[in-house]
Image (cartoon, rainbow, N blue to C red; front, side, top):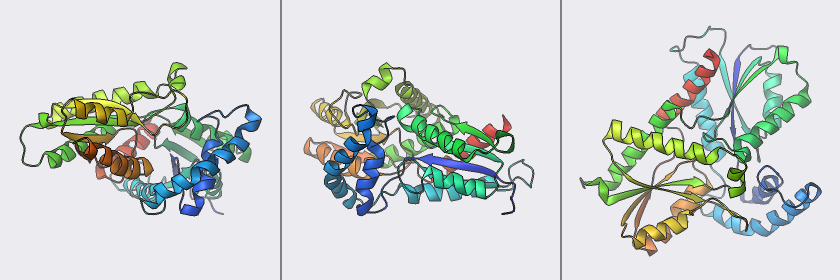
Length: 340
């Protein structure tokens, strides 16, 4: 195939089952990854992963059945990739006309797998590749695992580094265009939630991050520090650009297994806030850039019911998904890496 001399961009994400039937194999792939959780000695990881995926599949299948029968993450990431490619190839960018951009998608645990994506990139003759993790906050369980897999697969293709330049963007929790995109969504959501009320103090905001085992943080994983840095920057932006002084809280969701995870949980926090008299709660899925089961089922269904039971009106901030400012933030991330 004739090389088209394009700069490739790969968006790395978790992936998700594209049907009810794919839930069990997706779970198997997830629990087979020792970077997420170590299931006994290494030689037992996959057998135990097979058992866990079998035991959890029915419950997880039900959860996906409540949000359309599949994960929306591939559909959303596909539109993100298309929008980013269009933005990068617009005439506004000061890059040589011969260096056009092509954006790919690589998923860690479901199709399109990273291996298949790299195969396509090499077939296309890409010589310069930017790998962008769609996790703003670095953790070895998310970005770390995805990049390790990417580098492992690249090494198998044995492409000389002199002919294939790869650069990585593995964290961008404090990247100002991302902060601006997120704070704009939050401000808009709070305004809609408050409606005609002029007192924003009536509403508390809850930053809900995906949880991690506490041991990861104890061993030096920067995820929690990154989350807190993002919140600090967003709160500052809300004050500076939107004149919003908010009562905010941080909690963690989606823990699995009996080991100690980051605290407090989002469930515990909702109940505590209700006891303290909170009536209106605006929840922000801080560690997510796309809608998926954690936002559409866990927050929109489970936490909504829990809040209602305890006398709280709960509204969720929209995910960044394909908002124009977020697409432009990703574009600036890529361009900054090229300029450097």
